[in-house]
Image (cartoon, rainbow, N blue to C red; front, side, top):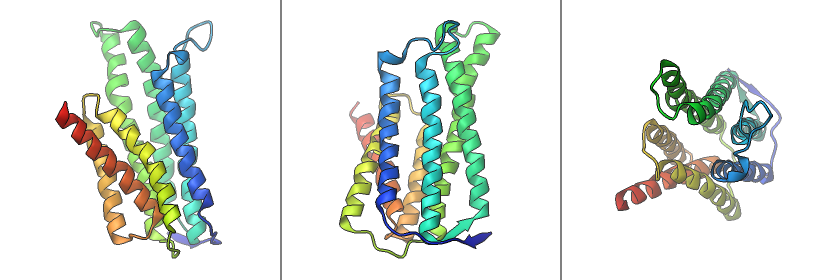
Length: 235
């Protein structure tokens, strides 16, 4: 079901949102790699700062996705109830994955370096398997909703060269995140998830090449996969 809204013009908000998304990628990387966030949040040691920070950053990421959808809807003047429902489902799965992963990852690392007991096997499964499945499902849905929102209501304006350049610059941060998560670790289902998003973006870009958001997604995920493949081949 599609309804009409009041169109909005101007690309500035899109570039701001994509820049915020790039900043979140940088903050996630710093949070994961820095020793500054390994301390405990409270005296009862229920969680580390790295785990709590990831939950907060995950919330901010969903807010950016939401604002992107709102921006695209207002710009085109159309909304979709079906895509709205899909977004809610994706946001729930995305949030559930963080709630499952951050807690069990902390318990896994601290108390279950091996999985000798049934309890540790359950903790490890939630950390390494179940939470990842929730994340992949939520990740796919959120990104598909953003792109599908643009697909059902293409923007009539032609992006300027400067708009494309800014979108590509922000896409490079996403590509770097893809490489960091795929190129230097054992690749599993995450490769197919990224590839699925990349294929969807390329197909939409081929059908509607003037849409800026498709250029952003295609560059981000295709480049991330290509660089990952090169690094894996060289290693």
